[in-house]
Length: 337
Image 1: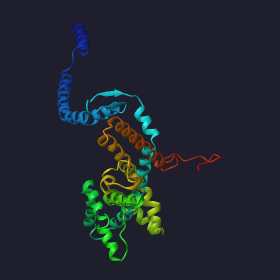
Image 2 (image 1 turned 180 degrees about the vertical axis):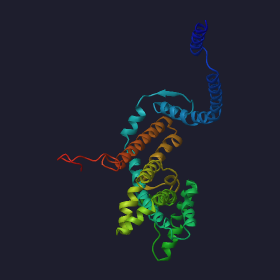
Image 3 (image 1 turned 135 degrees about the vertical axis):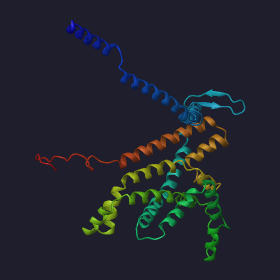
């Protein structure tokens, strides 16, 4: 009878293992339930962000997209669906493409000296023997803390005609005052200088961080091998800073194509609307002429232009297949290259 009881007892244990949860697993199940309850409370902490995002970001985006297909009567507030007429008007109008050209010219004239000055100063400030670099780094970054409205008014006063500070300096040398506002190219240069002065300190922070992240052993080894300072910069510093350079370039494109404050505030009017950028054209269409549907269409046109330039810059600056970390290519004879 004892063996039979033992067999019955083992059979019951097998049944219990199948249908009854052990105590250890029961404890784990309770912990899982408690963790799920705690995770539910976490949603309350992130809910305000999503609520603000839905109200102030997603809803305006969707609303403006619908508005771009309509014509809105400001007085009555009624919407009239007109299809793609706003987009057709934008494409057929040569003025929108003129604003694209103005934006690109101002951006190119500002980005080249901006990145050049920022990179050169970053090399100087990254030198461990240079004194006072912390103070200078903060001074260079200070213009980035100034509001764009203040910068626009400041440069408008500096380059005003005939009593601006720049013209006063020119007059001390016996030269005639320059009317920057009525010269389209000079007006673009002044706006480019304002943008460059504002943003180059921001790029110094990124470039300095990238240069300091390069191992000193690599630079010392290159110096021992006889590499000059120029070779160390072009063969080591710049290639290793490629991710930072790509980031700065993409963000500069996005920010440059959205320029508005400087072009709107430095000079009120320039012959041929030479300082009208894409965003200023959108602002004038929507909030001055009250053509909200057409202004929304221009906004999405700007979005497409920025997306195209951003993707193009990423394709141009992306790593090639034969960069570091890729498999070695095989030669025609069957060996490794």
